[in-house]
Amino acid sequence: MKALCIVILILVIVVALFLVGIHIKPRPFPPFPRSATLILNTIPLPDGLPKPVERFYQLIYGDNIPVIDSAVVSGRLRLRIMGITFPGRFRFVHETGKGYRHYIESTLLGFPIIRVNEFYLNGKGRLELPFGISEGPEIDQGGNLGMWAESTFFPAIWLTDPRVRWEPLDQDSAVLVVPFREKEERFIVRFDPQTGYLKLMEAMRYKSSGDKHKVLWLAETLKWGSVDGHFLMVEGSATWLDEGKPWAVFTVDDVVYQADVSNYVNAYGL
Image 1 (spheres, helix red, strand yellow):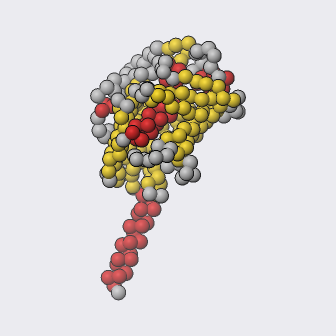
Image 2: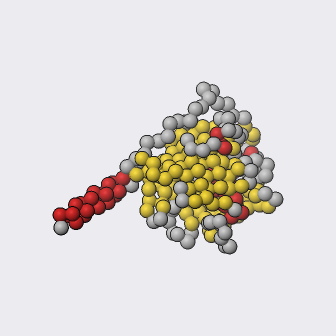
């Protein structure tokens, strides 16, 4: 009987620590090194954009659109794993319009318990988790869509990359056409009718390797704001429609543009 009580007490303590631990935010990653002076080249805001698209770019950039070749975005997140939402932190490294690397740590009591390395480089996706690796054409397609959706951290790329174009849809929406190998993919992009800011991106995306059918994937911008003098999405979420709620919510702490990431984008970890 005494042994049973001890076991029950230990279980209660473990559960209590777990319930407390999933509400403790980790410390942010150290800021990524940045240049003392950053000068971005610009292009004029193009003519002929759909009205909600033109309004959006006027709001965040004005008449001059910066040319951003690389970005390192760091922050905290909430990540749902097997039905449980864990806190965590992330660092996303982009060669804009070309590829990315994600490093994510899910944490408990502020300490890492799961580390994720995800890549989309040279048109190939690879997701490395502690319990397996995912690759294949479906991962490639999802990685490409993820790369273009994450460009809400530097939306200038949707104008400065000549392979990308906007098509009109209605007064508050437009279609964003992006390249994928020899083909193209499309997002429906919805803008807030009151503020004019981008609110939601919708696309059909494969969920897992080997899937036969795509699922509607939603990338929602929850908040726009300024980080280190740059205006960008500072909080966003990703949702599979068949799950009904976000599997990840990202909040930005730090952003660095125009760093040399040619080696860093191929690395592992922080």
